[in-house]
Amino acid sequence: MLAVVGWGGFIAAFGLTRQLWLGMLCLAPAGASDTVSMVFRSTMLQAATPDEMRGRLQGVFIVVVAGGPRLGDFLAGSVADLTSPTVAVTGGGLSP
Image (cartoon, rainbow, N blue to C red; front, side, top):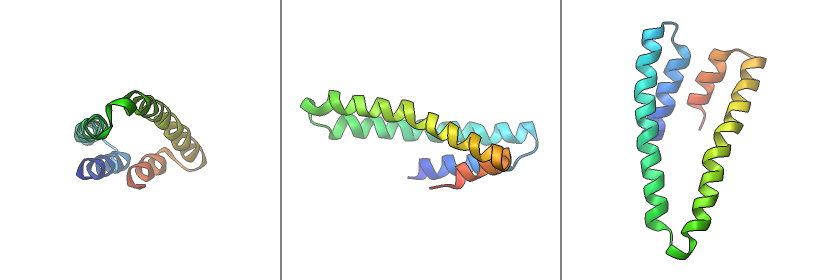
């Protein structure tokens, strides 16, 4: 949970920055937090899934991991078009 909250906080901070160097300082820990979260998700999937179900759940996991961000991209682009990129990025970082 800390990794997910950290990612959201750093993305929200990135959305509020106006200087490149400060934005890069926000994106680096956001990426690290996302990596930690990804490792935990994958580990839980592998450890908690029975052998006979692992392939099926891995397939669902891939669809979610590949499709979820594309839906988020569409939503962020729509919000940015209706409001501003700052609102879209900051809101995306703060949304649950």
